[in-house]
Image (cartoon, rainbow, N blue to C red; front, side, top):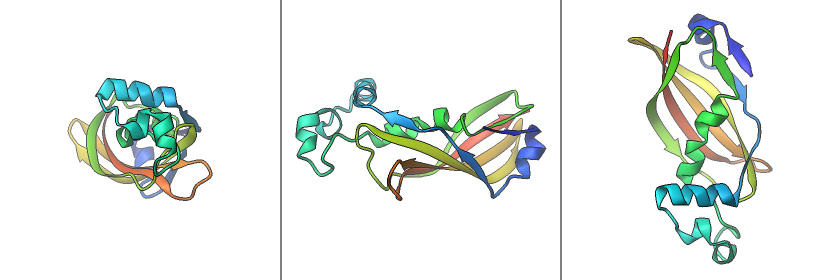
Length: 150
């Protein structure tokens, strides 16, 4: 994990790659739990037999499940000391270019692409790319917005 010594140190990393998270396995159990939480029980996610005969040859994770893993994975990449709280401010752009079959391992990489004053702190725009092990195409690319309060 990369540790920045305050917001000024973090600001010096603008336009740079911040690092990678650990690999995380997206299990069928996780997919089923997400389906239960959201009510999205589409067969492509929760019916292994039917999904095996479908376009991906296996059940695939919901795009929003993959998106929801960003906070957990991003906390493994970097931290900024002297920040009392970081608040999710939203997203600018999200894309899901490739599927995540059940059992796949994914990890995140992050790049600081924007930092602007926003009372009571600064608004960080971080491009997070999620990749699936063994493939070249990202499974999710999102510009996250985080309000960082000193």
